[in-house]
Amino acid sequence: MHIHSHKSILITNNGERRNIMPLDFVTNPLFQIEGSDLDFKVGFKPTKMKGKKYVINKSTGDYIGIVGDGFKCASHPQFFNGIKQVIQDNRLPHELEDAEVKIKTARNNAFGFLDIILPNVQHEVITNKHRTVINERIIALHGIDGSCSNQVHTGAIDTYCSNGQITGDFSSIVMKNTSGFLYGNFINRVKKARANFELRCQMLQKWADTPLNVDGKTFLSSIIKSEKMVDKMYELAHREIAKRGKNVFALYSAFTNYSSYADDHNGFTLRNTGHDTKAESMWKREQEVAKWINSPQFKQLVAA
Image (tube, rainbow, N blue to C red; front, side):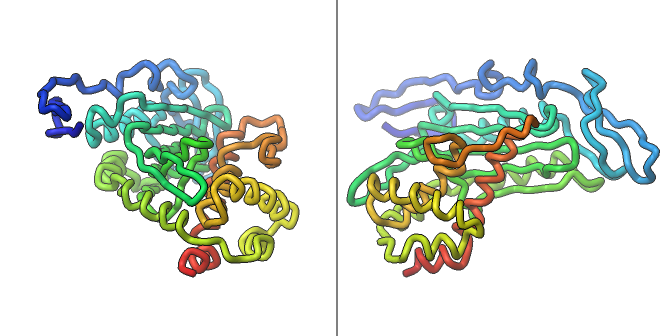
């Protein structure tokens, strides 16, 4: 079947025309920021330090951080609901059905992380040993304590192992919370930056078709500084190669396993510091992976 128009008419394979109701993605209770830990207004109070002010949670009165006088930000509900509205306005109704949404927080709710997977936007990546379905993924990050810019990243997720994939070289919108920040301008940029999901999947298929003809430890040591981490990643890569074949996509899958899980399964556990930072730490891992695959060494590997 195929979609006939951007509105609400579905044409099936036998030519039947059927009206479908657009999914109300924004107000779906599964995706609500309202009533969550992120649902509060942001306020500011002066400090005794010149050029600085406190960020406060106006609902609880808690002090969240110290920022410069020029710092401006939207509230979490304003930011994330705006992102969800943009997604709804730029997707066909069937693409939003069964969407999976995770909302995570860190640093006493100063940091918010929205992770959306669209299972109806998909593509297959096939190796000589394995095939997997890739779904579209959209991530939005928002901070109100000065430690995180406003960000939206588009990527993919491997349904075989639920590894998240952010490649770093496609649609990424990042704007800082400075005095010149305008929320409306940020949203307009997000509207114009719908990811070319098909192009990304073509790239992943190219990696699946590219043999991995390098010494694993030597290559990993060229992009990862920690010898202990190199050893763990080498073991993880061997497991992925056993499942997917000896190709660049298998190596990339080892990277994304590291950025998607923090447990004994892959050996990359997170140290419990007693602070509320897990969501932020896992996002930093995704940024690490994006850095590795955008390195000259990895690009040379793909081009070989």
